[in-house]
Each structure stands twice: as structure tokens, then as C-alpha cells.
Length: 585
Ligand code: C2E
Ligand code: CA
Ligand code: CA
Image (tube, rainbow, N blue to C red; front, top):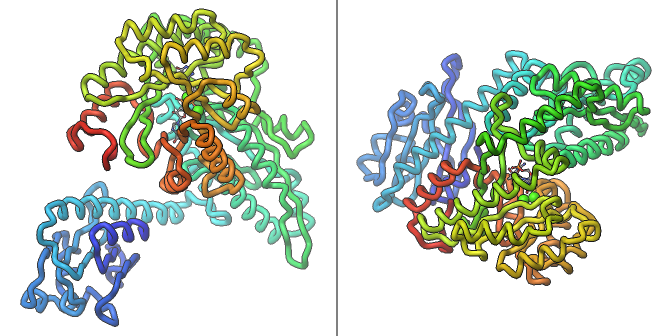
């Protein structure tokens, strides 16, 4: 709320922004919960409750005074005392339009000739209303026993609720997510020998360490006693989860200092299961994570294990799924989603990445992170990859024509495709049949492919380059061949992997890698795209260090082609055709 208030004050050049909260049950009246003051022109800020205006607002009536005459000011003591030139008060409402509080803003200058003001205030009030509602929901959560009182983490009840929500979402969007079961090793010993106070301290520290290891959008809960459960969302590669699990194991080992200069070392065993790869229900996901956790214990504790289905059963499941995948293209179950790529400076859209989805008749959307490996092992990726390429070229061509934008389309190539002798012919045909200019097509090659074991890789890349396509190196920084790659491949652009971007503001080492990567790429005349840009601080950092383009949830999730088209239409309606000026998606 403080950030929103500051933004609003900057945007409208306000001297006063205040948020009041009211509770029906609260006898003390409205409470000030946030106030932003700029260059106050009275020494002491009076209480707005002195005047009658706040009462009006709290009765649910918005007040907008764009220009205050001395006479008008005289009718409200507060406005008078503040010496405002303009003032507004807006009721803050929840989703069901119940009153939660009031937003008061005042400025030294009047608001004549500001046509968008009322609209801006409406949006701001909605935002503050939402924040207030969230704050209350949290308070209620604590009151209703959804939060663990020792650690402040969600408890088992709230965890189960989050699982249900996550499952529903994933079913709809095809995202992959992971469930982690974290169990402290020999916690009972600590409790028994050092006492409960120390035990509590350990649990508290563990809660903090777990929170630190994951993103804000992930769930960490205290499931029971010394058991913690985590939901890690929006997983694109299983390896990302391995890295987080590893990080947790390492974080746990950091000695915990106790009173009297003594130190305590705690360790944990972790089990991991994946949706939808291992299971598609809450119970099964937890059960499998638990099984994997026991495996970790039996491997000598202080490590993590990923659930491995061992039975015949799972093998059959796999074969069945592979058979379904074989028919998926013919049955029209494959979709291409598109995620915009944004110019870091102008914030205008410059291109999009094609991301395949499988809309399974029973399982809903399935993430490529799950079925691409399957398709690669069975060779099905060749057909699927060509279908994605063709679809993406046609869509890109249509959007270029319809909206007059020189949009670039990024298509992922798998290692298996790169081994195909006729790859450049397949690409050339897709370009010819769609009418798309080769320069608009960018093929993304992941860095984890070994240049030396894929014998035709360099030849294929050169051939693609000859046709006029652009090439980018995907997931840059995760493999071991980054520099070698840059030197040997005719790549125009590199994409910094999300696992580094995610840690901007968290891990100085990863920040240094991002910085150095951008510098090195620029020295070699390559452009840089950052992936997985989720929050403002990521963007700020990347911009500061000269990153050229950004892609991530901060701007937009991958969209179905209809939704992507609507987004482009909306952009055109708002900003017209030209690219490269101060526009946003
Ligand atoms: P990728 O090439 O690294 O693609 C980016 C992935 O990051 C996409 O996941 C995208 O949805 C996700 N992403 C984008 N912004 C954010 C963000 O802000 N936060 C987070 N957490 N994630 C973000 P998706 O669609 O699940 O794709 C996963 C991987 O599957 C891709 O990783 C790519 O390697 C592969 N893939 C997708 N489509 C194709 C395809 O048509 N062919 C081939 N061979 N591989 C594909
Ligand atoms: Ca990619
Ligand atoms: Ca990537």
C-alpha cells in the first residue's frame, strides 16, 4: 500500500495521500493505515475526521473537488487547515461492494485540465480496496486458524486449500508444478535434549529459511510438527526444482546460533513430486512426495529425492500417454500459445515466443515441460515441432499484416530436430507456405545441447542462417558450454535463463552473472533477452544493466492465439500503429 500511495503521489503530484480503514465492529472509528506526505504546507497535519467530508466518503459517497475556493474550503475544517487547492475522497470497497475504508488525496495545485483524473482515481481506489481486502483476509486467516501461530506460515488447512486452487489453475493453463515434503532430521532429539524453547526456535528458523529459498508466489506451509510442505508453481523444467531442493538442503545446514554462543546444525530430508507427471490429485501428490521423502531418509538423510514410480503400472501409463500423444496432432489437441517479448526501453511489443500446449481430453492442458521429453524420447517431437513451426509462421504472418507491426516470432527447436538432415528444408517450406519473411523467424536452440555430440548442429545452424532466419541461444547460463556456443554458433541473440532472473534482488551471485552475461553478449554484438521477468525489481535491474528485451509474467503470460490477437487489437486501439515510441502492451 505504501508503494501504491507513493506512486499515486508521484503520478498526480499530490501532497497528501491517506488510506483509512473502517470496521463495522470497531468502536474507535476509522483508522489511519497509510499516509504519504509531500512538502506539507501546514506544520501539523490535522485529523480529517474534524471535517464533514470524510464522513460523507465513509457513507459511501465519492467527493471530488478539482478546484477549491476559499469559500468551499471554509466548509470543511480539515481541507481548510491543509490549504489544499484540490481534494478528493473515495470510498474503498471490496468485491461485494461493502465499504472497507476511504482514500483521501489532496494537492496544492488545482486539477483543472486533467481529464483522466477521475478515471485514475477510480483505478487507484480499486487497488487500495483490493489491498485492504487482502489485508483483512489475512487477519481473518489468522483468526480462523488457517495460519500456524508459531511460524506464521499457512497451516495444513490453508495448504490443502492452496493445493486445490493450484490444481484447478494448472488444469486450465497446463502449467507444471512441484510439491515438496520437507521433514527435519532427528528433530525429536533436539526437543528432548535441548527443550521446547529451542525446538520452537529451530522451527521458526526453518520456516524463514524455506521462505527465503522460494518465490513469493510459491506456498510454504507448516504441515504438522516438524513437517513442512511446499508448492512450487510455474515450473518449466524439472531441473529448476532440483536446484531449489538443493538450495534448501544447503540453507538448512547453515549453523543456527543459540544462546550462550552454542551452535546447532539442523538438516532436512526432502521428497518431491510433480504435477501432472506423477499424479493429478492432492492426495496422490502428497503421498508421492512423502514416499520420496522417506527415500531421502533411507539414503542417509540430509538430501532430497524425486519421486520415482517403480511399478509396471507407471510404465504402462507412459506407453498409454505416448500413444495418446501420437494421436494428439491429428485429433487437433495441440495448441500454440504465444508470449510477448518486450523492448526493455520503450516497453512496446517486438515479438513473441511460440509455446506448445497439449489439451488432453481428460487431463486438461499439459505443459510442454512434461510432454516434450516424452516426445523427444519417442521421436514424436519431429512431427510436433514442424506443426508448431508452421502454425507459428502462419499466425505471425497474419498478425504482421493485420496490425502492421514487424513482429518477430521465436520457435523452439529440440535437439532431436537439430539432428534432422533436412531441417533447413522444413523451415524453408514453412516460411514459403506461410509467406513469412525469413528475417522475422527466430529459432531458439537451448544451450544444454552438446555441440560435439549433435554432429549436424553447426551445419544445420549455418544453413538456417543462410536462409535468413535468426538464431537465439535459449536458457543461456544453465549449460556448461556458454562461451563455446557464443563463439561457434551464428546466434543473433541470447536468452538469459529464468533461474538467474528469478534471483535478482535475492542472490548477489546470480545478479553478477546476469550483469556479466549482458556485458559479454554486447561485447560480441549479441542482443540479450531476459526470460522469467516477474516483478518490477527484475525489470529495473535488467534495464539498468542494458538488457535489450524482456519476457515474463510481469508483462504477460503465454496466451492462446485468440487472446493474443485481442491483446494486439487492444494495443492498436490505445496506441495506434507506430512501434518504438513510449508505448506499453
Ligand atoms: P523455454 O523455451 O525456456 O520457454 C519459456 C518458459 O517459461 C515457458 O514455459 C513460459 O511459459 C515460461 N515463462 C514465461 N515467463 C515466465 C515467468 O515470468 N515466470 C515463470 N516461472 N515462467 C515463465 P512453458 O510454456 O511451460 O515451456 C517450457 C519449455 O518447454 C520451454 O522452455 C521449451 O524448452 C519447451 N517448449 C515449449 N514449446 C516448445 C516447442 O514448440 N518445441 C520444443 N522443442 N520445445 C518447446
Ligand atoms: Ca525458448
Ligand atoms: Ca528459456
